[in-house]
Amino acid sequence: MIHYHFLASWLKAKTETERGASLVEYALLVALIAVVCIGAVTFLGNEAADNFSDVGNSIN
Image (spheres, rainbow, N blue to C red):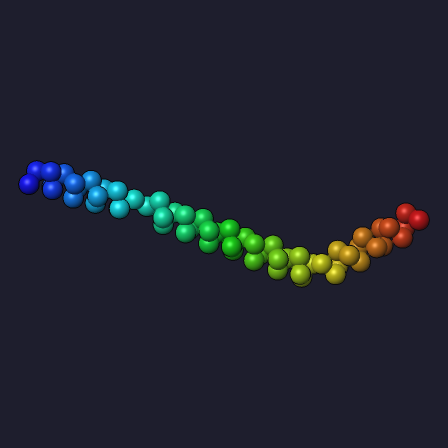
């Protein structure tokens, strides 16, 4: 009976870690950053391209 109690306690301790939860949180954080970056590039892409064209034309 002592071995069963030890094994049950050990399994409970191993399964109650927050490692999986923190991994999901980091994945959501990375996904949110990617969405913000894609949105910023989409929103500012044409304006940035125009600015680069203006700078390139002024150099020539």
